[in-house]
Structure formats: structure tokens, C-alpha cells
Image 1 (tube, rainbow, N blue to C red):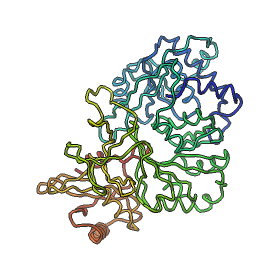
Image 2 (cartoon, rainbow, N blue to C red):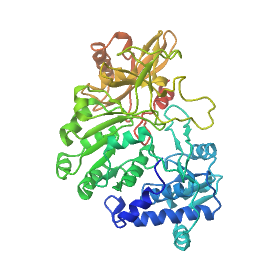
Image 3 (cartoon, rainbow, N blue to C red):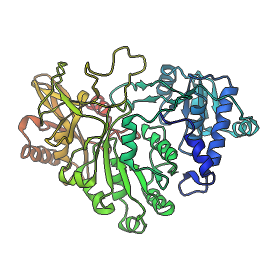
Image 4 (cartoon, rainbow, N blue to C red):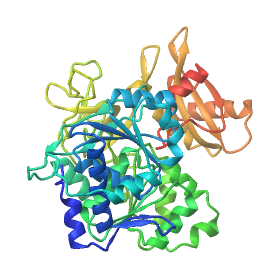
Length: 494
């Protein structure tokens, strides 16, 4: 855990430097303003009766105030739970109850869902601003440094909270090894100008805190728009950014004139993660932006992280890189923890990640040897590069044979008439499951296209892996950070 005084030190060293900026507007906070704002928010949390170790929930759109509240919660010694503004009432209610939140902080536009929850709440209205202005900020510092309580995205069921212990404020401790590696991977420093294009309530929002701690500047896009993102890179001289593959597809879909009219020469590092990127899309982005794409694989739990540069990916297309934390172990799926040989698919485990346990889970989240997993399947090559197959829950077992949907999806995505696709297992009375492909096509669809796609797969895959049935839809269901919701497809077509 980084020292509580990281922001304070930056505010004293460079008080007038922009800390947070809203893209394409004049709204922002300098380091001195962010430091003062965080103190006042911490004092407000004390004033309303919160004590260190308690939890607050946050229902906020992207903006500078989000980071000020995060820092205020840290200084008050509180856990804070960012909530998606796209969640329905029952989903919000589940998380605030599961996390035992004592208070909800919500933006004015989220007043209605905030009031519907059985929880005290603060709205970011004029009275909130007025209260902050009158507060005395000379308060006794908390004994612990508050931190984020993160929930998994819930692609396979109810999201689960990952709650780690707080650090004592009086302790002077360095960053954990994995966190040091992540920051080295990103290359954040005082010259960094980082464009945040995703919702801040997602776990990638923590990258903005890393930039602030490094003394850089964060530029926040209120809502993703491909043209606005390019404009922000040019206007703010962005050096670093982070994306998901769907955003790449939308950038590539812009008219040629729009894509070419912006000066992107300041752009040095474009990170991407969260979902598999179709190779054709990634190659097109490399052709456009050059060798600045860096892909990483990780998760909310920080069990482990891999990273791959553009040059490495071009040599090993489809890989998500080598571990930056510790050794990768591919273990058998039968619970024996048996190590599998190079090239064989099994459950992906890491050494060297941050210890974690899911909220309310009594069972440890690691093996007897201390390895941790996200529940994904994959293999490593002879040089230690990881290739992912699927989540364990998405594995198709047909006639007793394992079928990895991603292998089939890669073939289908290479077809010129397929925009994107998802392969799922549906119930089958004879085989247990059958392979079913859900396709978003680039043009008109008809039974002939379905037959053509099945034949295309049969020319390139073993017969048992090929789709037996195909459905066409206009758009695949995804959450706000681009993760495909296969459970919704299984419910719809199964």
C-alpha cells in the first residue's frame, strides 16, 4: 500500500500542476486543489459519523470529484466500493448489503436510484459543496489508510467482493513486488499524461490513482466516444492510455478523414486488456498507431499479471505475454494440482500475486502451494508465453471431450463476413452439450451463410469442435468494460 502522504507530497512539490482534467473541457483540479478537497471530504465523512474501517459505496459518473472522494476515503480510513451506474436496483442493493456499506455517495443524476436503496446517502449537490467549504480540515488523521473494496464484474454470476486488510498509517512500507512491477510495466512518471476512457468504477480506474501517486496528470473522458478520444489525445498531448478491444473496433470504424486529422505523436503507450482482442483488429491498430500497444492479462483479484509488447505479440499472435509477478503454473482440472507439460491446456495459476480472499468466503483462494487463479484455462509455450483458451465455466464438454470456445471463435472471426462472434455450449440429449455459434455478421444473413460458416470451420478444425448450429444477432451482450456475457447467450438460446 502506498503511503497516505503520496498526494500531499505531490501537492507541496507541484501545487499548481494539473492533477485531474476532464477531456475537452475546462473542468479540473490542481494537485493543491485535489489535496485540499480530499481533506475536506475526509472531514465530512467524520462529521456524518463514519469511523475508520467502515465501508462507503459510490454511485458516480466519470469526473474529477470521483478521485477526490477516493482520496478522502483513504484519509478517513474507509473502504470505498465503486458501483456501476448501469446497475439495476436489485444489483445495487445486493452489493451495498453484501459489502455492509454504511453510506452511499451519489451524483445528482443518480439521486433516484440512491433514494431507492435502504441506506443513508449523500448527494453531490450544492449543499454538499457548501458543507465542504465550511469544514475545518484540521482533524486527527486515521490510524489506517483506507482502500478500495472491489467487486468482480460478475460475468458468470453474482459479483464477489475482494477485500484486503488496510495498512497502518504510521507504517512506512514499500509497495508490494507485484505493484512495483505493474508500475514499471506502465512506465508512469511525472511526465505522464494519462487518458482514462473507461468508467472509473471499473477496476482499471485504479490506474488513475497510480498516475497521481507518480506525479502525472489524469485526463478523464466522461463517456467513451471514439472521435472525442482522438481529440483528447491531440489536445492534451496524451502520453499513456488504456482501452478495451471494442473501443479499438470503434476507432477503426471512424471515417478515414477523422482518423487521420489528429496529431497523435505524443502517444507513447496504449495499454489494453479486459477481453480477447481479435488479431485482425490488433494488427490494424498497430498499423495505425505503431508499436505502442501493450497488452496485459490480470483481474480484480491481482492474483497475477502478464504483459506483452507489440514486438513480442507480432512474434506470438494471440499470446497475452509472460508473467511479471512470478511463475505461471498450468494445473490439471481434476483438483489434483498436477502440473501439466508445456503446450497442454489446463487451469492457469500464478505465483507472486497479492494474497486475497473473497468477501464472506471461508475457504482460501489459493492452492496448498500458494498459487492463485482467475479460473481461466490456457497453456504456455516453451518460452513461458501464456495463451488463454477460455474461462473454466465456458468450457464445452461434448460427448466427454473438452472443446475450448475461443479456438472456434478465432476461426470464425477470420471469416470476411463475421464482425464478431461467441461460441457457447447448449444442452444436447445425446452428447450432453453441442457447439453453438452466435454471430454478428457484417452484411445480410441467411441460411446459406450459416452453412457456409459451418463448412469454413470444418475445413480448419476437427469436426467435433465445429458449430452444429448458428444464430445471428445484431449485437453481443457485454458489460461496460467489454467482457462478453455468455451466460446471457446461454439463457437466450438454451
